[in-house]
Image (cartoon, rainbow, N blue to C red; front, side):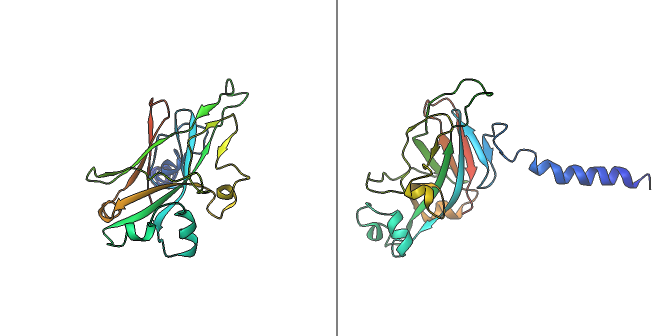
Length: 193
């Protein structure tokens, strides 16, 4: 029985350690090994709600691609694809944590694969109600706004759209890099490609 205690202690520790940095927002986390974990950069919390390939022929996806000229034609050769990263951003500064601050949300993102190949976002027009926009967030503010179309959608995130080489999606891990608006830091999330 005495020999069993160290084994049980090690087994318990092995179960607890993977969850010790889950990015619940209490401690800043700069790297997440999967989607759904909050990462912090530039004083804001970012969470990938979901990421996936978008099909311009699908009814739902067609709306996400609203305003992209010839969205279907741009990916017709099947060597490239539309890839959507749906983000939630929160400004958690409030009394008790120090002064409340208005912080500009990140405007620089990239996807990078395990070979170092990068892709940058495609600009979406103002008419696209799902598009992510870098805006100043007041204390307790969020992107997308809860009352917006993107905030009320089943995904609940604002779209950062990428046109990527299919190889980027195949060479895992594929990561989203989020650069703070002031350029002071970065966070990264491994995407569930």
